[in-house]
Image 1: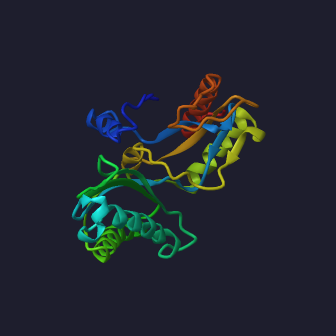
Image 2: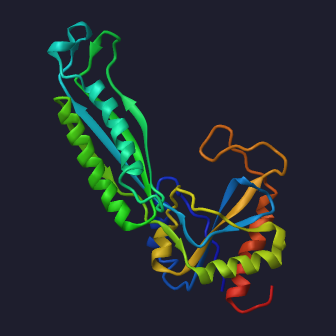
Length: 264
């Protein structure tokens, strides 16, 4: 028996939990997942051994100071200056505290402070994301974000509160499953259209919750019109070539047939 799941709410990191809660996965032996990827041309399949998706953690840092008139800066404890220093210091968690052989990303994505050009606010809020591929780096980054934010803020006579929210686990592809995907891809799509990704993407995918319970693999499905423009996922320019859909179906059919022992 083969079941097809069209996963809901993947971007909110809850869709896989909803699928698991239905009981539909409890008696399934193995899973195959795929995701369109506009970096690669339509008609291609891409797999990678090891990590293909990262752990996407999020955090919010609030820097508290003492606001007031911008002309009287000596009477204040400026949280904007402190927050600026925190942003720069957090980047050293990758450049100076992470093994260069490991993939780690930290990005500050929002900063909000104040409402007037001549008033220093009492606090600054900023949010960001941390991406890692192994539990040791994940634990270290959480501790380090809290440590650096607090210590740098203190140097500017401010304080820092950090809310750190852990996202989905990483998706790790075992060699035997990668070998199966490559073997099937070469038969179904042709050797020239079956590729090994040179490195993991640092995005997150909540299909990893299902992978924690069952064996399987996740692959990338090329979705860029050959010769056409590239539009990144999660951007206003994203575009998916619908011609990738039958390619994805061939891939899933081939993987299922191979697992069940049929020739493809």
